[in-house]
Length: 123
Image (cartoon, rainbow, N blue to C red):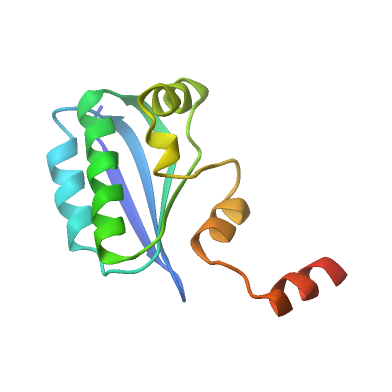
């Protein structure tokens, strides 16, 4: 199965929904497309990824390094338990937040002001 990538430009961030297999065959094209994205906070949605190998892990790591060099935030959502375990074993979870929901990922991408937190808490 080939990989597919859907890019959604939000007001303040870009969401990339990935699906298929992130392997040696798919990663070069995905990585090329990721590099072409504007330099803004990036949310990678892995909920459609059925398989990832070392090339896929390397691609995510290089994306994280690029975001860090540009001073932009990166978060992942929809990571399978197996993939999350690989990230933890390799220490990638220390570079990239692995979030349980899109809302949590957005909190990672955008540091909140005290006023925003107060408004959120008071509903």
